[in-house]
Image (cartoon, rainbow, N blue to C red; front, side):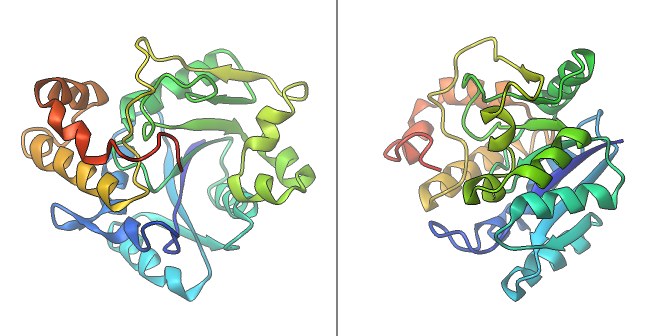
Length: 240
């Protein structure tokens, strides 16, 4: 069982409520779920949000999209993700965050394939940054996630879920998916209003022709219309 766990919350300090801001008439998180569900290597998709009342609207939006929602601790995200994975009896967890609506299901499938073929405990496409910021994905075996859940004590490890794994590389078998081109300079994540406006423009231009547009389709569009990259170019890269 390979489950994608999409963690989401309303309390973003930079752009509050961003996950529910509408893109082409639907909440951003629902647009991201559309893309995640196109990945062929996933057996389940779960949104992990918190029990905080502020996150009630996320739970409602996820329910309307017919996706399973798990609610757990607001600050201990590692605990939340771990129990969301238990809910669906996952053997491996693909961890995603709800500020990356351009995540590419093809990249998810490639990462899952690499992880399983190499029998890794943990694999990601950002240990060596070559993919655009916003195409991030990582996968961890349930056994390794349980060790992190049991042993990680630093606040940052509990909040960010997986750093314990790659900081303790001697304990775990790590894998890395490298992009064929170095695209690390591209910022496609949503932390600020400028990021959201950029992502919205991408959807407006590509989604009507193909709801399943790829990372490479975005790049081709930006090569034709480089001015679009200027929409959020003033934001320091990887500021998230």
